[in-house]
Image: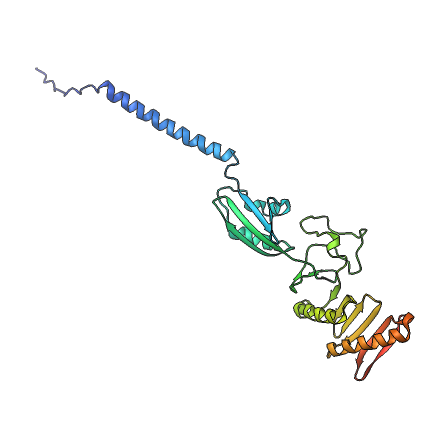
Length: 264
């Protein structure tokens, strides 16, 4: 029996130039992928994109501030993502910083401006009051008595100011809820008493002042300004009358005068 053979169309051979062109494209693609991978490796391994932070602290430009760099280090470890809001909020947690402004200059270049708390008073053994009347509490061991180099204090440089910045500051004792009013009254009292300094201002139910000239003044809870002015006149008269025994306690809570007692 005869067999019928099906004729198949013979595929023409692809020209050599076509094959060469295809191989060339594959090589180019591989080279491009390799170049990109190598570039990513170089960038990742280099410091080219590392965040650069310029600091301005209390108006002074600082090229590098190690303690604050360390404070925000976890937030700048990723060179590709810098969240300025997170950096700002983190710096606000620092106990000695009053205000923070963070601005992006370029992708990885950031300018940070810090205003630090200054110290106007010591707030008992718990913290400080700034010249703006703000209470802030660094993680310190502070003693209400005059501090000396021998006292114990935190060794954490992020939280520890120089001793000289608060050794000579007056001490305040009051409720935290009325710190602003308390500090405002302190300034009023101090302006009346100049050049004598207040070294201790206590406010519980009444106001009491301990002064640098070995005098304690009890002002009570009302008419404090009037009573303080009366104290100054009375103190001067007593000092002129008995110059060697002017130190003591003045109780100014009497309607028409005061009670005075010498220190024991």
